[in-house]
Image (cartoon, rainbow over all chains, first blue to last red; front, top):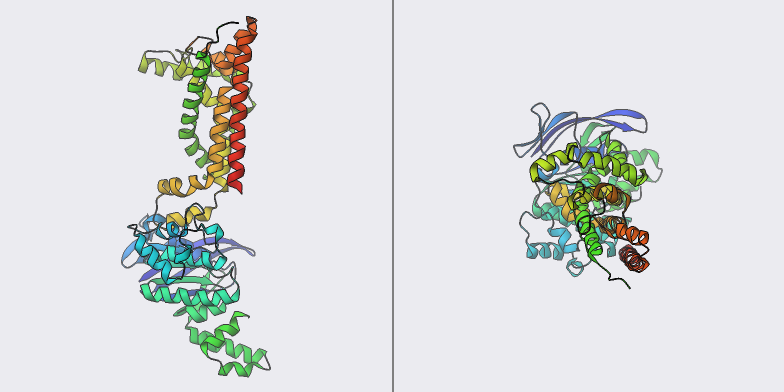
Length: 253
Length: 222
């Protein structure tokens, strides 16, 4: 379980604002932090990973202290058990796909890395360099690399934002499947409604650095449907859509 | 035709190899600091490392002579430790060459460090690897062209230096007489054959070093 309270001053387009977030994520839960660009979503992930330092706060993961500003504890990123999937993938260009996946493994296990690649249908590409892969393939490798480390926390920074909608949809399913398979606690930030609907167990809304409220994906669907009913004359038919159809619908919103 | 003595040439090669090796050892951490440090004084270190580019070699040589002499702050310590002067000795010209060629190593390396995306470093750290492992496995392999450029330029620059070496080392055969000084010496003695051979060797070596550098860099950039 992750418990965190974090404060940090940020600079946005409308000037200075404070990221002030308190969150609790259960083991194996998939939390999506949902909000507009510049709200502090990525910074929140970077603070959890230790890539940035907060002015104040604490992070407790499964009972161990990663950060406590009052006690002067701040573990460096390499001592925190996280798997970070970056928006730009950040695959190592000098290594093959297989070496990228194996990079973070506590004990280098080639057969396990190959097994992971097989699960993602990428085994044939194991000796290729990242530059020769498509965007979707790179994103899969980035996800596998983060999971191969068997992290306590999987952090996903808008991993699907650079991909087209068909690919986004299939990758979402893969992310969810892998997260369930490894029972990894995951926090993903996104400004895409379809991500929140399909992946989240719980959604947190962030605005100008503040976590303003939380909802389940079902509540989010209902809320959006109400908005659509009000805003669209033809909105009524949305009530009859399945969850998959709704995800597809919001993909284009 | 006079007998060609290649001692100066081999001494110069030895000097260039040792200097380049030392420059790699010091240049990597210095350039890393220049590229990534958030200190507002990092520019001072950058300026200091670039000084040999703009200073006349005689000015640099003069100050180095004061620093490295038996009475100087560095030279006196060296003398106490090894009972041997730095000036007019091979070790002295190694120190001078190191300072003189420092910008040739630091400039390409700091540009190389800056060219490595920050997210690669962060990815490595977040995958549980410490800063040294990240440097060796991720950062340096992704700036090979800069490493090669720094090495070749430092080597070639050291091979051709004259003023600083002459000021600090003098012209002692087998100890401090490098090729450029030997050429000067030969011309003064109107021994054009020796001057020709040494000059041709330097010219060929400089051209081959640069040709190799550009060929490899072209291959790496495609």
